[in-house]
Image (cartoon, rainbow, N blue to C red; front, side, top):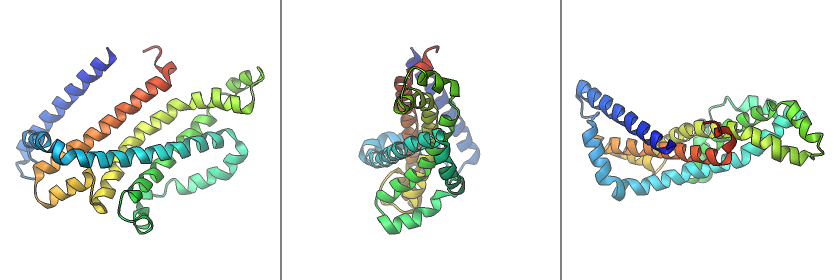
Length: 250
């Protein structure tokens, strides 16, 4: 019945947000902030004809970029976290490059990759890469030495220790980083699609804004929020399956 409780929770939260939105629209009384009825009406009317194709484009960009990031960053972070020698070389590079706002590289990526989906995927992947890398490294460093020694005493090789101790111990933290990165990825997606794009939900929102079609603009905002919620829930489901031992007592 966990899914039912979550569904009820989402419905309650959505109702509270719609009520707050409606009240704020009454207070502001501006065409730029239409009431939820107009926006939800346009969302229902335009979803299959206009919004769904753009949603597919945006979803592909986010999923592809996050898949690339985790495939590259998670193994590297675990290796760095478990190897003091490798960490001594890689850690200073992480400390120097992690604080740099990666969004500033969008013009460079546009020049190198064009204005299609490639620079947007690359930019999101670059940002999420560092978030996963730092999390995986720290998770690997925090594994108790006793856990490793107990397995090594049974004759486990380095690769077996990595597979059966390091990876399972770090997976929950990596999933947490992925869920947090979802919000970052959606935000960067909107920025990149609105600044340099001709497709995607971000482009749709800015296009509606330029046409002063504010209810359509908010329909696009609802669509982007829906994308974030769906991705978050999919990661929750994946973690529940892959890291079942963390949910045993719930």
